[in-house]
Length: 437
Image (tube, rainbow, N blue to C red; front, side, top):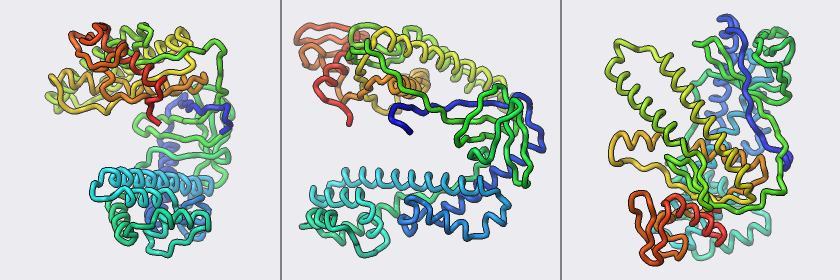
């Protein structure tokens, strides 16, 4: 992707219900697509295939030599896409495994700093990592070999290798999918025409025609999601948009997210002041419906009305969030935004009602939309360290207390809304360089 572009996913929907016959053909492709992915997971998801998954053409050649495609009767446009989709999943799983092992290494007090440094080096250099897991000799270029000898000096290499292998065996997961809800398509597998889309099937030269609600046409790899019970589909296509920049966007601001006022800015402005009303209405309705359904499940098993109203409430809430984020950027004209790194939601609380509202808090959606909008408008979004940020005075730096939603500093007497104080501290810490890297 070009550096001046940003990827955005757009969706298309069918105009008319999909016939049962056509839906069965699409489901058959999705089922075979999943079988190919599971074959790749089973045969190339372990330590013995680490050298094959980058860049993946070895796996492609080995899969071509199998009889799997012929047995399934799956067109090549789907067969090879399924292979590389599975390879992407395997690579992601290895990244998660390494991250977990890295976390365990850092938390292990029985390891010396030199041993931790060696293990981190091993996790970073793929050739060494693969050789250790497969009990092979470590072969490296001269420049990397010299660095490896430096980090391995003074540590019990064999002991650390056994520790690493043990942690990988414990935490690495072989993937599997039973989902038949969709599959990817390249340009060779579809064609836009006649206000709809023609999709290739397992029958040679036979395509399914699906009328669409719009006339947009895309030339990229797309994903087709199936909803058999509703006789509909959803097409997801990537669109690359040019990043915009504005000369008047020159300000530095700190922000703090809240459950009632959505965002408080370090200069005292607030955005999303009705957010709490939307959020409370949504959370209380979900809670009441959950209670009613648990009591009357036998008498009222249907969930169509529930799903429809839940979707409407979410759309209202999300539309309001996006409107207020747009207003924030237009009014504040920021060049850099310093945002507090929020901790993960914690269990427990004052009441079930409070816990429910906290669980329904849309902070993840707010954060993702803010990141997207900042990228689209060349605004730098920086996360700052959030430890004790609400208890530290933004004026003098001393520890204060919170009283009825206000922050009060006993040292300098500063008194302000606690979210405003946190936003001012976010700006202060960001300028000082206390950020998440």
